[in-house]
Length: 319
Image 1 (cartoon, rainbow, N blue to C red):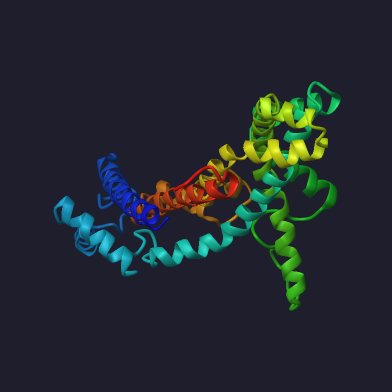
Image 2: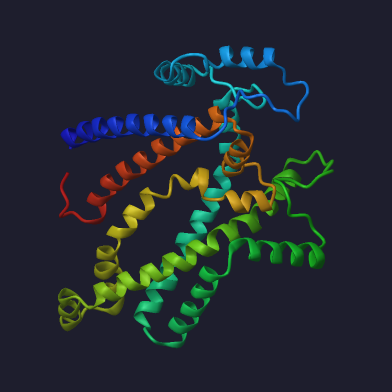
């Protein structure tokens, strides 16, 4: 176990280094330069360009820029080219906004996907299986932003309540409970819409895995021994069908950054996905590089957690 942990940490550290190098090179190979003069902005003079190049080390060789960028990043000195705010502070602020959206959406996805998929597999070709299959295909086929606009129109016109942004504009109450419930209400629609596509895809995946496991010889043997259906399906079949989902669970962590760009943009939710989109439009390369690096860390951390969870799900796996 200790040897596995050490070997895994070393491998993932090397992988993260190459990810940082590739992302840094890709940013600098992109067309245009962040320090070029904007002809539409008369205040952007050549003196400002030179001062900007020196401040952000753009006058140094590429390998020196790489070292200085990550040195400043790890010491907390990296600032945004857009507003000169510390990058880590901006990301942490947006992370706290995206976290409840990610948690609630993930809980909804996994809470509804497994019961739907398991029941559809057990009652194969029944009314429940056919109806959930039709609903899943509808949710997969129709874009999420279409459902978002339809729900916004219905909720605003029928219930006459605001749903844009994280809180209602003009709330003057001093009650903490009023502000909390207002925040919860604004969290409902984005979370539901963020979970609909995941529920549709994951429930189909659960159904397929359960059907494959139910057809195995050991399941027929357990049924022949007189075990109850609940024991067969939930104790034996489901546990063996969980291994692919452990891998999927580990790869969900990067969804904190890029998993809700459209939803956050439509609902005006100031999260990390929306910040990444705005940084790309503004060519705020320090924010883009930092988010790329954090995404790499999340992916590697997720795969590491998946490796550890394999032992819990399947005792036959040894690290």
